Length: 404
Ligand code: ATP
Ligand code: FE
Image (cartoon, rainbow, N blue to C red; front, side):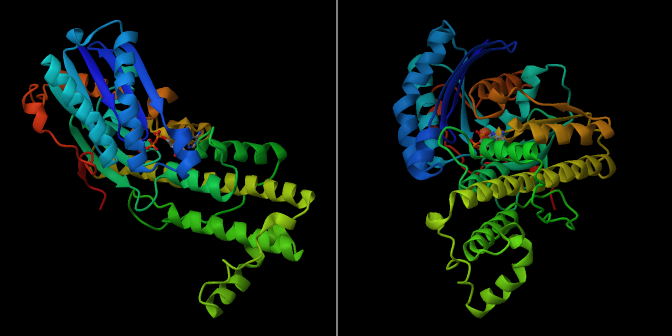
């Protein structure tokens, strides 16, 4: 069996051919990350969809050529139909419909999050259900219990930002972003610079600490970060002790905010045009320490919530989870992997991390999810005719929500 997978839910156009036994014959991708970041500072759905439309034929062609096959060798086309950005999903689905119609191939619709969850079983086919999936990416943050193919229960999710999104914004706020690397990578590198200098990470209060569930929240940390950056810049401008600005001047700012209806921060003297070179270096170093503190706070929360989810599965659901799978772009972070490894080792739970290239968006996982579904006896959505009426689902959740 050979499956052609197609993925276009966000800013990566991808196609791949995978065999029924898990052998990956090709993995073609085109990323719009750099141009989206340069032009829009993030993914702009309509522009990303135009990019998908421009590249999808070439990417599919490359996947077939790299796999040394033609559409006549393909037994099934698998395509992401959600969740994701509507205009982008529409391009991948449109291409899949065109291919199955022309070559009379059945179509299988794939949930992007299920594909992330099942990737670990492509790498390690002995990985057994039930396992827990921590999905941490630019668009998602979820803790999902995978009890079988097509059998998922969501224990927790973010109430606001996804961690990757929070890191991308952090990199922008701290002016450490670059179009060549993702925001999370910039934050990870800045944290490493701070640690290498021996600078302590700036402390952030952990949000949600008293909530007795497995949900996440990162937007408060971001507000806190913005405040610390402004206060530091303002203290530098005024010649006061800038390093302690974030803490010592908080009270002043609170009262000033009240008296001016919140305008105070925006009007603070934070223009760094006239800041000396020496002060700029100090500011960069402080920003590295802020990045380290922010990253610590995000991962503290993720690790604590994951531990709680394991406890919940054990005590409330009676499920002894033996493995946790981390997937999504943030899974590339070595500090997160280190902390999760430590937490899981104490609980005698294994950590499964697919290679980074398969943690971020790709079409190998889409083809593989289709193979898993076929093996589990889940019927395909339809033959080439029936496939024409299939629609995409931008908000398609994974499994039932038991987070409350
Ligand atoms: P989704 O998969 O939810 O549709 P996406 O396509 O934005 O979202 P991915 O490609 O899985 O997500 O991951 C990209 C995100 O991962 C970005 O937000 C990026 O900042 C983050 N990321 C990448 N590398 C790292 C790293 N080393 N540390 C932390 N975050 C990282
Ligand atoms: Fe993804």
